[in-house]
Image 1 (cartoon, rainbow, N blue to C red):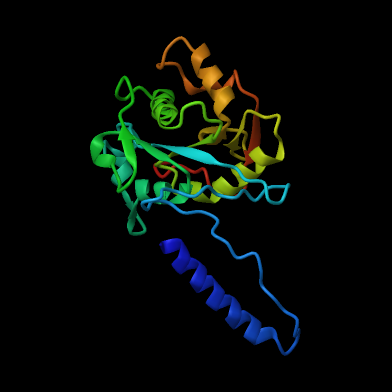
Image 2: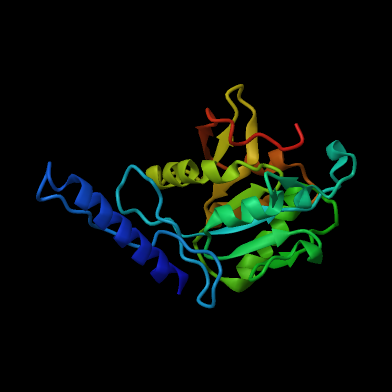
Amino acid sequence: GVEVEALAGVAVAALAVIDMVKGIDKPTSISDVRPVAKSGGRSGGLATRALSPAPGTLVVFDAVVLAGGRGRRLGGADKAEVVLAGRALIDRVDAATYARSTVIIGPAQRGRHGVSTVLEQPPGGGPLACLWAGFDMLEQRHPDDDAALLVLACDVPLASRAVPGLLAALAGDPRNDGTHLVDTDGRVRSVVAIYRRAPLRAALERLPDRGCPMGQLLTGLTLTPVVDTGGHGMDADM
């Protein structure tokens, strides 16, 4: 598979590095070469290993990509398919998750090879309705599972750069219910976040309906903020 090809490429590159430095440090070695993450393929995705304070901590997670909405701030354009630097926004986010399972929330035309789509109810119901729809599909796919849930909005093109920090914060504090990105001015980015499955399930069940604002969900959760010093949570339409 593609992961074996990747491992072979890394091994060849490692040998080249050793060849360059062996005159300075003869015992040089490069070890612990292994696949970290994979998306797609017949066997499905491979979970990412978090860059966490506890080396070797494995964070298994699924992903929900929010790709609905009416694109009002883009003049009604289909924001998921807006091309930035040669790639549609939705492709940038989907390729960034490296999740065990990914669900795209939006109409069927948002579908990508090997990735399921589901439409939120009611259609256009907002980010909470989208998250809930994705959560329901993943619960059916992996019942009684405790894998974390990564939530990314398709119109945040640099979201991939925030994922390692979110995973590290999640792994670093087992008492939290999840982590989310926070702008340097304190604005919470609830759609660039990762939630533990059980607390999220309980918080959703406490809500009266799917039309609630996202903030109402967050008030029932203890989340670790990750300050976005790199601007990774910036919207494409801002």
